Image 1 (cartoon, each protein chain N blue to C red):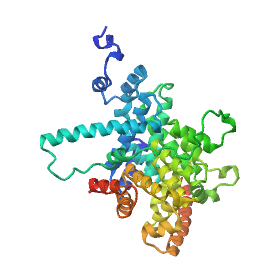
Image 2: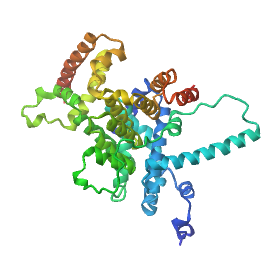
Image 3: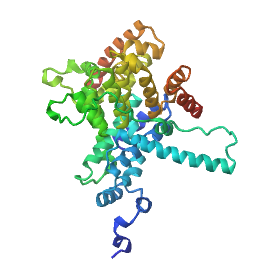
Image 4: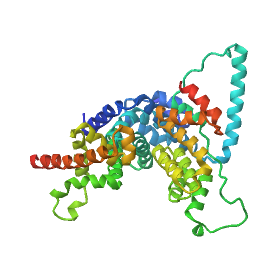
Length: 223
Length: 200
């Protein structure tokens, strides 16, 4: 066994004292699929496409419900627990850009654009790695939130959590408090950290948060 | 001519191709990818190593989320270079990429740089004080030799970059205790470093 493999085994042994490697593996598997699927399709996924995707998922869900109802399976049996990575995939949505100027027709030279503007442009074009890089340089809460979401989209969980933590402390954080808490919970799900996800989701479920229903549903699925 | 070779890869579905591959041979998967440019072919290969790779990243960084990010960054590096490089031993290459990313993160981290000051005594010139990977590796090997509370606090402060308050809350220690464990840990680490340098 070579030196690096020994270190890998040491790292795994050390991690096993504080977490479940199975959850990590499931999360990483899912991120790998995500990464290779994005590259395979060779298309830039844009936030705008979420509504189309949502419609498709809704249609599939309706058909599934109909089939299950017909087969007599909707008898109120307890839902099967889902892994955190699957729940993340089910509930994560890219937040539509509500901060960029919508004025069109005015061609602005990209050299005269600020990092924030270029970052939001990258975000809207589905170039999430670049969006994270550009927006994370900003100190304004709104850009930090979008940077965090872009980080999650590019499978950078740690960066996402750090950016949401920074957003919490930024000026005007109150405005985005609920959004940050929701995405922070999703970050913990993505990283397979069920304990932290539960704490954060419980706070949402016990409040008047706009994602209260979703938080309750996830908590039920996590058991 | 082999019949299977005569069938153009374009006419085979990805699933069939993945099934037909000998998954024990990493290099064959890579060869198949280099031929078809279908990145999905790489999924079983990446998934095969993600647990071990996470372990390696966790060994260096001691933090779950950072380790996960590093694993994904390593795969991104693989994807960027896999077309240009002749890969003879994928596993070794992948693990080296992962280690290099971890070492870069540690070198760039301000707090960890403070910790590598334990090696200062042994470096005479200022140039030498630019810590190399060997120093980082040595410091990491020595941290587990500290007393439990010192180790926990040193790891949390220098590797996980947690604040005194966060460490105090996480390990149910007073602010003073945390400070003391970090100071003593750093001092003991310096002694351990000195001993290990003399013995080599």
